[in-house]
Image 1 (cartoon, one colour):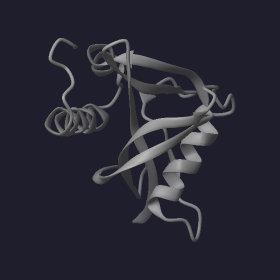
Image 2: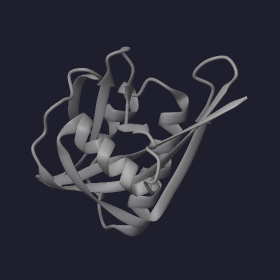
Image 3: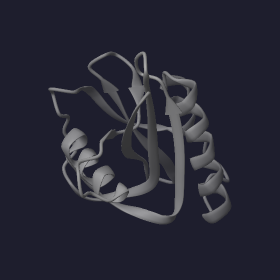
Image 4: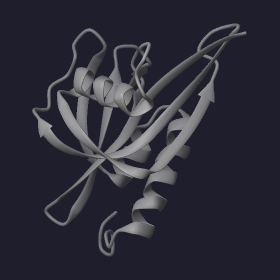
Amino acid sequence: MKQEKSCGAVIFREKNDHIYFLIIRQNQGHWCFPKGHCEPGESEQETAWREIKEETGLEVKFFSDFRATTSYSPKEDVIKEVVYFLANPEGGELRLQEEEVQDVRWVRRIDAAALLTYDNDIELFKKAVRYIKLNYNVWENDK
């Protein structure tokens, strides 16, 4: 069985007293969080940072104590592990990488949960939301 590894992040920001999450629509049509394959010699966060920059144009800052993994089989005889971090944007300009990404959106929590295509991403999103709720005073009036 071949092993593959990718890294990415759940990216969020506060704006106008609401929390927004960045999700992308891959060219294959599914909605997810930005992520991509590890290159030799890169750390997990270096991979995630590079892939986010390539796919969305954004530069991000990671929360050092959030790390979640998912795994799935993208094709026969392949197991893929994806490591996700939590991040805030801190630079760059939002734009999509047309070779891989059809759409990039900042969406509120309720909309993100409805758009995400795969159960693994929905579970990851729930973990990120729990982390944010426990560690930040947000969402008293936000959905």
